[in-house]
Length: 336
Image 1 (tube, helix red, strand yellow):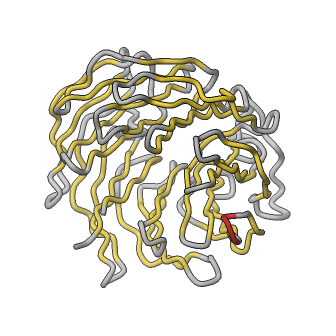
Image 2 (cartoon, rainbow, N blue to C red):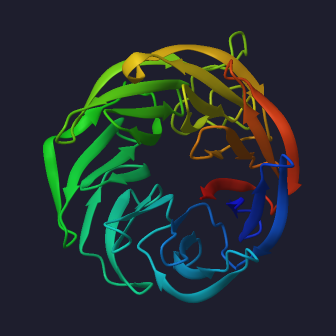
């Protein structure tokens, strides 16, 4: 069965569905649906076929959508307001809880979910400019770009958050930590302002310890380190965005150069050096990798296409196909 690809298109408030046809090396457009102004994140419960998608407005909120896997159509079931415009959503405990963070509000919430109905928050916390929240089992990690840290919690079976010891794992001052992925005994963070990927060692009970970092900006690109309040759209500044693993490679995107960098991973997941810098869709805020690490689907905030690439033996990406989607896409998920 072909994988299903979903992209959030913030520009026109839709979600596009495409089929990843490996045999033909193609992305086949299926449907673009939804009325979700500024949609930039969603979480998918594959067991129930429900998609929880954030939308902007007054108030901002979360829509529950039912996915038809055959057609790619999304049908709205219900909505509920959130306490801010959401930047990242993740599901926990087999879909019984939805976790989200708001960059603008600097706040995070834990909502219980029953048959697609999102209840009142049962947990919350605050850090400036929260950009990412990810879950693995009972472990929850939230990245604060504004405070250069990763907050660390455990999540009980009934949705209670408890701080780990220590409560935070530090990132370098002024680096602008943005997106985090978990990978066994490691976690990898991409920074927005300094253009690094940072490896954190993850202990058996969850806390992260910063281990090493590597610069993933294209050499001689002319991009300068950025900072909060500066605008990479008006001056040549580093603008790191997303990070994912593809087999023996760690891939990271940088929006000013519209590049995905491939960094070699060594024994135990240690960081090697970047080996390839591959051009992709303009201003690539989000991308995703198939579960086997063989294919990448990338979208761009200044593009109306999704790009399908194959990961080569040297870590470089070979473009196979481009398919039309909605405007200003910034989030991608691939469903098995």
